[in-house]
Amino acid sequence: MKSALSTTLLLLLYSSQAIAFFAPAASLIRSTQSTPSTSYSRTTMSAAAANFDETRGGTHSIADQVARFAKAKAENNPRYLDIDSIYDGGDLSGKRVLVTGGNRGLGLAIVKELVAIGATAIVVCRSSSPELEKLVGKWNVYDGVDVVDDEAVKKVAKRIKGDGGALDVVINNAGYFYGPQELVKDDTLNFDEQLKQINICALGPLRMNNALINAKALAEGAKLVIITSQAGSVEWRSTQNKDVGGDYGHHMSRAACNMAAVLLSEEVKSMGYSVLLLHPGFNKTEMTKKYEHIWEIEGAVDPAIGAKRVLYEVMKNGMEETGKFINCEDGLEIPW
Ligand SMILES: NC(=O)c1ccc[n+]([C@@H]2O[C@H](COP(=O)([O-])OP(=O)(O)OC[C@H]3O[C@@H](n4cnc5c(N)ncnc54)[C@H](OP(=O)(O)O)[C@@H]3O)[C@@H](O)[C@H]2O)c1
Image 1 (cartoon, rainbow, N blue to C red):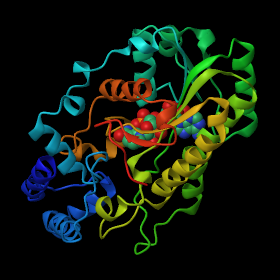
Image 2 (image 1 turned 120 degrees about the vertical axis):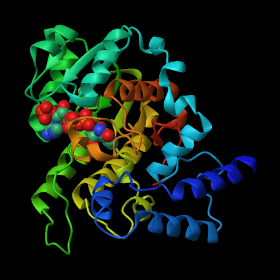
Image 3 (image 1 turned 90 degrees about the vertical axis):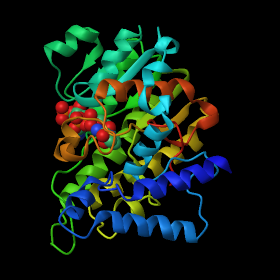
Image 4 (image 1 turned 60 degrees about the vertical axis):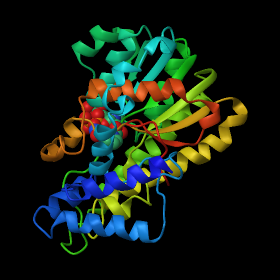
């Protein structure tokens, strides 16, 4: 009751400061439109009027990214603000962990952290680099693999099996977010790009997980992790894309990604494999460079921090949480 009350007070307090939402395209548009705090107040008031607790009793994260970050700061929440104070990568030491898209961005940061904690990082990517090969060993880099290419994915899964297999964790991290905003009213929908995002972000992880399972490249009790996005939450669209919409291809791709992961979790739990859907938080990478102006307002972090947040959730969750959609910023669930 106390926490529900303080959350409400915090939301009211920060509603006047809410100048951007995570769905960054919306915030870009908002900055040239009506006063954002007005629309945020409307969201809060209508939610309150409906007596709706979006945290479901404290188990779920909240949609408004500005308010979420402000609340973490007001509460001095170490889980959110200082992952180093609770993170210890020891549980992954000695484990074999595959990372797709481990050549740059968040994927590379995860790979660096895996090496630092004594795990074996196996990278599947389109293009390697001397830095990457020095980091994990040339033999642990499988390049030339596009996650949209059925044959290439099947082939690499067989090679990994032949080279030892026994993957304890698979982190499907490769992803893509088309740059320009898509809006019906501007006639800027790009259907080819929409299909491309669905192919990479939704079918990509399914293709990779399918190939690794069928190649028998997984260890007993393996975890299949999918780096998805809060953008895949349908419920959160009415806050993060409120009155604006947009980003059709990217957000649809993550909703489809989430659906595939939940279906997979149901199918493979009898095989002893768990499936975890992780939103990695807001990370300062190439992908989000276009939203640099809201990085600080919305709590974006260096990918080295994002990597620890992700690995913390990888270690913490397993079969009991299979099929869940978790926010790596606060460790809480995200609604579908
Ligand atoms: N950054 C964030 O705040 C944020 C928020 C929510 C979710 N995410 C998700 O987190 C993951 C990592 O994001 P990031 O910020 O690190 O993005 P990034 O800097 O743009 O890196 C994307 C990675 O995905 C790889 N990739 C893209 N298309 C591919 C394909 N068709 N086949 C194989 N690899 C492909 C890229 O490889 P190339 O070098 O070959 O292009 C690169 O390694 C993505 O799935 C993203 O959707 C990120």
